[in-house]
Length: 486
Ligand code: BES
Ligand code: MN
Ligand code: ZN
Image (cartoon, rainbow, N blue to C red; front, side, top):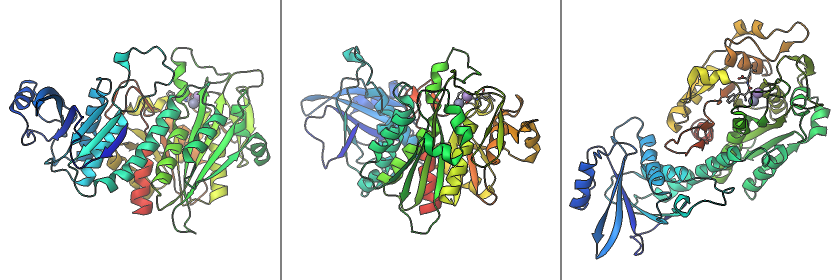
């Protein structure tokens, strides 16, 4: 979706939308539309849309009103996004190629206006690359939005938001691509392309490099796959030189069969998005670099494919991590923590971070605990946890704090190695976090976000269709805005 600004309504536009607040229709709308809104129970609630055809200057135009709810609502921003998103959802395949968004008289601030446009653009994203037999009526028609009557400062606000939109769209793309297209090497190449010209520094570790570094846990997961494993680091130095970077680390399992501890067949296709953490990290780096964030940030992705094979690791194998600690691999399907432990250790050694935040589709148990409403947050640092919670609220990418602590350690003791990679069924998300915590150096603020319930949605939401949600990008961008740039 291309979004542009204009001083007045272009003559050829035949679809015009405005924003309505709760229980108040914009001034000057045709009586016929006001009547239609009333009859259609349109109250200006967030995400409500009403539309109809009216005659203006001898021409029939389609007009729409999108509701943004109560102007005083605490979640006003999300409601404005819902208004924009609802317009995209409504008209994406309507046959209309252009929509005019008329904000004159809407009373919105520049930030409000940008939020509407962000919702519009995000909800319009779709990946139809592999569909060759779509009927015309199913095809996306809406390509352009021209925005008029905007408050001063909207274009500047939109510049920042559109960088964020690029990041979210990139994450959605990575998550949507099937695993025959997206594997560790192609993940790296797509990131290179997306970040070209931004000045971001890209560091790639191949299997030889990782072998020399002793990353036995990460390499153990990838050893059953024909696709060689990678670590990708993207370094953005937009802050003061000498400021320690904040490091994001993502689980990038480009496909998770479970390995020898094979998953059941039904629904296994979902495991193409087991790289959702790495996808969010990559998207966040795109957003930060494109909006030239005044912050030093490194995004690290641990990229592997977890396959069963003659070369695959077995349950009971003991691997040595880069940190020197050993792990008994009880279950090859608990692979995410094996990837992350080496990526986390390397990231701390390499970048001496101010804080480390990892994102991972780590445990099914997280979905049992929190459903698809927010991600689990685990942290060794209350300040970091509070900052992330605040960023979650502000961005709409919600998080809910869960515990970690030494009481859970005994659940992952191993009789043969320093730890095993799974605990019992109970507290499954916590023991996974507790495992990761063993690889965090004393004094390093660390947070782990288990996003298993958030990366993908089986039904459309305000800023995404069915499928990839782009979760995490906005959370990380908000954290950088508030905590580092703030
Ligand atoms: N990638 C999965 C977790 C997952 C499940 C993410 C469903 C999204 C949706 C992870 O690698 C996994 O398999 N975890 C196991 C851990 C268990 C073996 C301790 C799980 O959750 O069942
Ligand atoms: Mn698994
Ligand atoms: Zn996994």
